[in-house]
Each structure stands twice: as C-alpha cells, then as structure tokens.
Amino acid sequence: MEIVYVYIKKRSEFGKQCNFSDRQAELNIDIAPNPELAEQFVERNPVDTGIQCSTSMSEHEANTERFEMETRGVNHIEGGWPKDVNPLELEQTIRFRKKVEKDESYINAITQLGSIMEHCIKQNNAIDIYQEYFDDEDPVEVTEEAPSAKTINVFRDPQEIKRPATHLSWHPDGNRKLAVAYSCLDFQRAPEGMSHDSYIWDLENPNRPEIVLKPSSPLVTLEYNPKDSHVLLGGCYNGQIACWDTRKGSLVAELSTIEFSHRDPVYGTIWLQSKTGTECFSASTDGQVMWWDIRKMSEPTEVVIMDITKKEQLENALGAISLEFESTLPTKFMVGTEQGIVISCNRKAKTSAEKIVCTFAGHHGPIYALQRNPFYPKNFLTVGDWTARIWSEDSRESSIMWTKYHMAYLTDGAWSPVRPAVFFTTKMDGTLDIWDFVFKHCDPALSLKVCDEALFCLRVQDNGGFIACGSKLGTATLLEVSHGLCTLQRNEKNIASSIFERETRREKILEARHREMRLKEKGKAEGKDDDLREEETAVNLEELVAKAEEEFFNVIFAELKKRETEALKKSKPKQPSLEIDQDQEQDQEVEGEDEGEEERDDEETPA
Figure 1 (cartoon, rainbow, N blue to C red):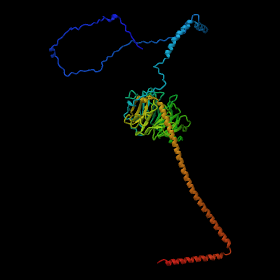
Figure 2 (figure 1 turned 90 degrees about the horizontal axis):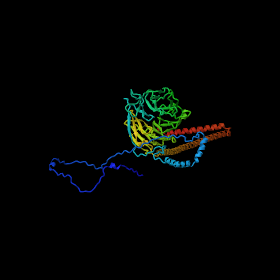
Figure 3 (figure 1 turned 60 degrees about the vertical axis):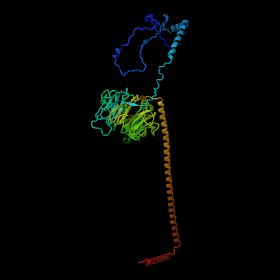
Figure 4 (figure 1 turned 45 degrees about the vertical axis):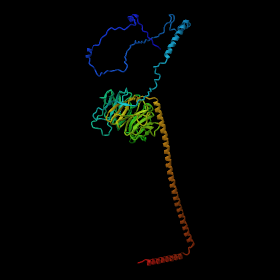
C-alpha cells in the first residue's frame, strides 16, 4: 500500500517568481596582491589538521499529529413500540412483529444491515497476530550461554564469636527475606559467651538484621510457615521445639516442654500440609520423629521410633538427620538417618511398626539432605558422605544415579524448583556444584568457589534464580545463577522422565541378575554341604558296618566256644581225675623244659 501525502500552499505565499536566463560573466571587484601583508604572516611547519573520514550525518525529529482515542459505552434498552402496543403484553408484541416482518421495507432494511453486520463479524473473527494462543504451555527458551553464577550479597554474623550457619529458610511471600539459624554443632566445644541469637535478614540491607530471634538454646534448624509468613518453627540444640510470631517480637511465642521434647539436637523440622496450617513434625538423632501442633506445644500429638527391626525399642532406633514431606503425597514421609539409611514411612498406619514401610541403604555416613524431585516425586535426592545419589521408589536395593566420589565431604543438596534435571550440592571445601544430568553426568555443569571455609547448608529460591549458602563462619552468601539454569529448556521434562525410567529399568535388570547369581552361589554352597554330608555319612556307614560285623562275629565265636566246651564236658564225664593227672604231668613237663632253657641261657651268657 503506497502512502501519499499532498502538501497544499497558496501561490501568494511562495514569494516573487524567479526568472533565470543566460548571460556573460561580469567582473565586479578585483583586489591586487599586497607583498607587505605577506610579512605579517608567520609560517607554521608542520601543520596538524584533523580529517573526518566518516560520512557526515544529521538527525532530525518530526512530530506527527497525535491520534486521540475515546471510549464510550452504549446502553441498549427495548423501545420504539407504537403507542397502541403495550410491550408488557406478549400477544400484542407477537402480533406487531408478524405484521412488521411481512412489510417489504423491513425485509430490504434487514438485507442491507445483514451485509454490514457480516462484515463486522468477519473482522472480529480475523486472526489477531498479537494474541497469545498457548498461555497454558510452559514458556520454553533455548539458551546457548555457558552456565554461570555471581555473588549478589553477603550477610555476615554480627556476633564477635562466629558461629556456623546451620539452616536457611526463604520468606514465602515474595522471597524478600532470609531466615538464618546459627549454632555450634561440635559437642561440648562451644566457646564461652557464644550467643544463642538467630536472625532474619532483608535482602536489600546486609548491614544489620531486620529481626533478631532469641531462643533458649541455639537453633539448629529454622523454617517459615508457608501459609503464614509471620510464623517460624525452630529446632533447638537441647531438643526443644520453638515457635515465633514476628508480629509479637523477638521472644519465643510457643515452646515445647523438656520432658516431652527430643533428647538430642533437632536436626529436621518440616511444616505439614493441613487445613489449619499449624501442624509440623521434627526429627532428632535420638531416633524419634514427633508430630506437633503449635497451638498446643505442651507435648507431641504422635511419636514414631525409627527402629527398622519394628520392635519399637528406642535403644535400637536409628538417629534421624533429615526429613522430607511432599504435599502431593500426604500419607508418606521420608527420614534420612545417621547410619546412611533412608526410611520410607506411612503416616496413616495404625501401629508404629507398620509405619516403617521400607528402607534404602547406600551411603557410608549421615544423610544430610533428602528431597523429592518437584516434577517427579517418585525420584528423590540424597546427599551424604562423598556422593549425591538419585533414587527411585521402584528400586530399593540401590540408587539409579550417583555422582563420583569427591575429595571433600558433601554437606547439603537441593533440587532446582524450575528444572527437573538440575540440582545443587555444597562441600566442605567451600565449593558449590551445580549439576545438570541432561547436559553431562560425570562432572558438574558449574563448580563455583563461594568461600574459603566449609559450606554447611544451602537453600534455593522458589523461582530458581537465587541460591543462599551458609558457611562455617556464619556467612550467608546470596548467589544469582544464569538465565539458562533457572529457565525450563525445550523437552527437558520428557528427557528427564525418560532418563529416570531408563535408569530405573537398568537397575531392576541388574538387581534381578544379582539375585540370580546369589541364588546360584547359595545353591552351590548347599550342594557342597550335601556332598560333604554324603561322604561323612558314607564313611560313618562303613565304620558302623565293620563294627557291627566285628561284634556279630565275636558273639558267634563266643557262642561256638561255649558250645564246644559244653559238648566236651558231656562226652567225658567219668574220667575227671585222669584228665587232671594228665594235665598236671603236662604242666610239670612244661615247667621242666622252661628250667632247662633258662640254665642254657645262663651258660651261654659271658661273665
């Protein structure tokens, strides 16, 4: 479409008309050179002159006439009826409509208006190039930039005696604040005069904390209530559960009694998904998981003993370090223990023994972090000893994926809330590792040295763009990751799901193979035992047969001799004296022969 604008101007406004013609050149002024003026000049040598090589350009602005828009509303009401027609009477209006519809002028008017209305409807139905037709779909962006992160802010412990930052919690409303729990976890090594205070920091003011929390014992864990941003739940070093309401000040609002609290430090606290928003549960290394209602903190509503032998004996219980509860699975919760075992529990079971459903063993030390994948709850992450492992509930004998063994001890880990294939880990050497197993499995996608001291905890913001890390000296570092690490990539959900399913299938095949090998080895061992038993029984049978034969023949020979002697006695009953005399003579002859032999021996023997 060609846009043409015609400028209109009166002839009188142009001025006098110009008439041009050809003529010869005329010399009006001729100035002759004056040598005296040349003496007044000073010669410059060399001469510096600037030259602009680029094209000279100018900028102009034009202000067009503003287009003014106005919106008006029209209120349509029924009217136009003749005076003799009552619009409230249905019969009169129907009769009048029929009369009007038969009129030719009415038909012509409707035909003309119909074409205009059809044109307007077609305009409304035309495609709007600015309309978003796929609002329901998640935004997908493909970024080729390298993963990176930068430090935004640092919140240092204001106390002179520095304490480790043991737990972090983001404010649920807009993530504008960060709650940090400070505690020294070295048993009986806490320095004298160490403060028990923990703080809530405003992200825009790192110089001083916004709120100071004053517990009776140092806080090991601290969690915001997701339904009420003014309420916080804390687990103390002495085993008590404390609750704060920031509207009431820095002091504890509710506190559990010592008799019904934990016996060891409370390492895990989590809010439950309930109607009231006041239910929570806690875990400690004393082997107990307790349910609480903050409206009545005098004693727990329920206690589960982490005894995997299901005998409900506290001395056999495993110490709990970490907790996991997913709101989409309200009847299940998971516990990470000091012994490297993850215990899956059923909250709705009738007895404590039935509440322990199954176990997952794979770590050599305490499990410091335990979290389900926010997109695929059947898969969960554990961090302990020198590795981070990803598990599936369908494979209980071993994890489906794991990182390499690091030189430094791993202390904490968490999934990204916006990307199913990304998770974060912290190490004792002060390094933050960002893993993306869609990108690569063997090494982290980004490894960042946050500080020189050990990192103890981390927490990811809900939008995945900010990460907070707590260190051994009580420093909370706020990091911002690159756009690619906090933006869902194309087909990432499908790829992550296929990886989880593939690895789970592989582990099931390996488990079946190992089971078969164990059965074969067991069968071979049992076969060897049977052969040994058969040989032993064969040897024993031969010995028994030989012994039995010997005893049998001895009995027979004894019986035969007995019968012979009896027969001899019966055959010669009348010559007892003769037989005796003959026996005596034979004995004397034998004695005489013996004496003669002894004499000959004495003669042959030299003196």
